[in-house]
Length: 357
Ligand code: ATP
Image (tube, rainbow, N blue to C red; front, side, top):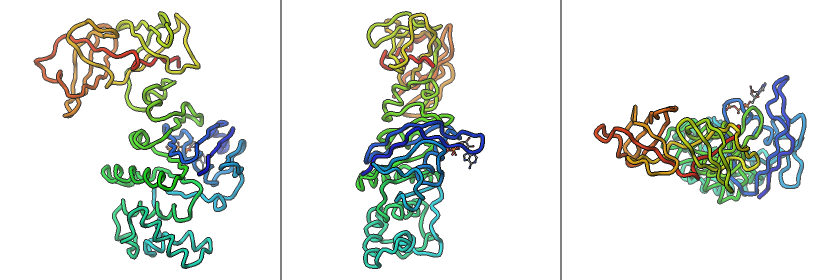
């Protein structure tokens, strides 16, 4: 297991600065995700780790070794990309063996390691097949075996599941986590799929315009975004503009157009002063609907449009004197027209995140 350290990494393409002096430490054995909007620099960072791009400034360390200028094939990274790029004329076993043959490993050793790698992704019975005789998920498993067989120092994955249908993606994401943990591999994983990241990441970084905005566990990033762009990017959220009325310990009271809210600071290193303008972020599933007003952090309104989805209903909650909020109700009670009328949406202070920018 190795750590991966990125120090002050800057990568430019002509006048486009794709990475702006990034600092990041990925712990040994960690399954680490890079997330962010299109063009934020995820692939550039991953390709810099793989050695396909040489940065203008900064350094990359695998453990204690500075690999910033090391050629890709000397870094010993296992890679898996969107297109699995298996050789169509070779069998599964030959595809997996390819990297070992290039490295001039002995034939008896190759046979053993290919068998072990295929077994680790549960594909040993398909060794003699050609890629076009396999399903998409099976091809992806072979690509994973091919990445693992060289006993890489780390695994670099770029949208590895984007060619698969929804059911296979679910199955394969669990499989990828299992394999990474079994092999104790430090893994960097680029995806657009937030659910993929939230469900299997140990930690994740959110990037925007070549900068890292936040690093944390899925729960930290989802429940405690430090910036509006992060709250907006991960999951759904209701934003309300307001002004700080007061602060007590870790809690802050904010006056908004729909009433006062007690909440928590999103970024403890950027705490607003009394009177400052702020934005509060509340996830739609954090609201609870009541018929009476006797609750803290409560907004009056009525349900507008609603979508019933079985285990949950999604409402547009039209407030009397402010913006329309999005509210998700599990085990829906208010979706039936007969229960409509004036309601109160309430939220716990821990679910009200006060953001400065
Ligand atoms: P996506 O989610 O769309 O794949 P990304 O986050 O992976 O995006 P990158 O591919 O890393 O983004 O691109 C970061 C920035 O660098 C973008 O502005 C992109 O246009 C630019 N860029 C990337 N590769 C090159 C290149 N080879 N030449 C010029 N500009 C590039």
